[in-house]
Length: 216
Image 1 (cartoon, rainbow, N blue to C red):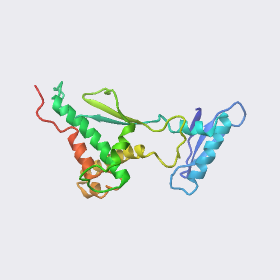
Image 2 (spheres, one colour; image 1 turned 30 degrees about the vertical axis):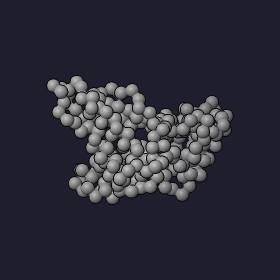
Image 3 (cartoon, helix red, strand yellow; image 1 turned 180 degrees about the vertical axis):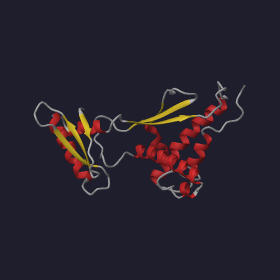
């Protein structure tokens, strides 16, 4: 709390400043790129320094760094503006497709393959942390969320929990899908299966928003 990014023209580091009751403010200097060799060491030093300044345990600082502590997938079904409802059978199909999107994302995190005939045995266990939330503002919009870490847990900040990796995989896949369509190169998406979408995840995304004729 209270740290503000300072504008700098240097392309190797970024500076965050905390204005305190003294002539000299406190500055934290961090690399701008995750791939610099000293990035992890710098972040370790920054977390330790924040703990000292705020007189808090490092575990508490790490829990705050996690941020909102929840990953969310916001999914909106594409329907005509004139439609006010969808068939109940279609509704259940879309919810199942949302589950399959996460289920096969879990499969890829366990053992990345281009296609799965059936979910891997351990994949359903990874769905236990996800919740089906209230609909958000917008026509037929749904939210699926996952708490990243509990307050008493201190996870490795450099190794994301597997359920977060599942969400990141979906987000990465959506980006690759858009890129593939824009460039008219399906191989962009197909060759990215190890870090993005497998075939069953693509099937699930297609099922979310695939409608029969809407009632008038």
